[in-house]
Image (cartoon, rainbow, N blue to C red; front, side, top):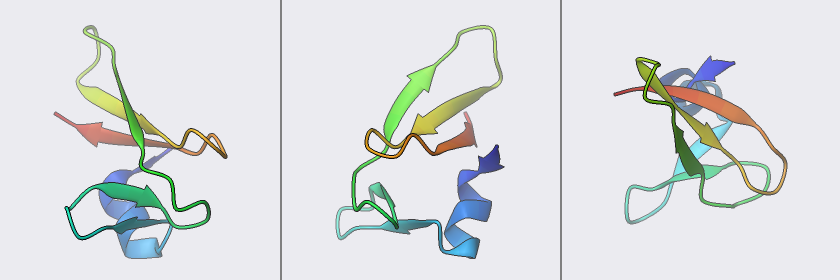
Length: 56
């Protein structure tokens, strides 16, 4: 699982005009999944299921 910063650098993610993270393949806004036991959040594309981790 890549980080969101690496996904932005590699072109897997793009930001829209409101600075939201979008999947480059599907043009869908990523959903956030928080696990209270982890240090990071998981960002998931609702269409293709790509997963990216994001430090909180």
